[in-house]
Image (cartoon, rainbow, N blue to C red; front, side, top):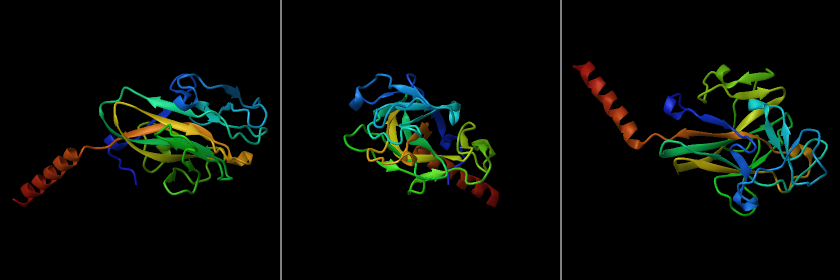
Length: 222
């Protein structure tokens, strides 16, 4: 369960073509990736990402449209976040799946060779925020909003999923994204929406809170 302490709330960052999201260094590094509007995706394995008008900020990126059926070689992407206060952060990535529950995404904090670790709904460590039947839901409607803002977690028959990538220390990070290199059907597409981060509290902070609580108890006993 995510803490409701403000220091641990997740800041969501939408992935934007040419803004914070580019080709990964292993795929050419720093260059905008080619985006094709939905419905105009080329033939199977054309290597293109496809813009789709849903999700947060009404944009997600998919490695293949329904008509293209599959794309095993869409260029690897990197979404970068910078300008954070020096610290240690939990890092997350977000993708969508429809009712088929077969959509998946490769993601990592490292631009390593080979297939990035794949996640799909139902896998260990993949968090689904909303399981109800409402068509459009923001995280502010949840019993506990894990985000600093209202993030769309349901739209139509689609649901948002969170994958934890681990922690980084510094003033920023990059998350690397790709589809399934062994994709065999359109229901195994990647629907990528963005990244998120939350600060990892320093141990000293927790110790100070504990000491404060003990002091309060001691005063009440007196």
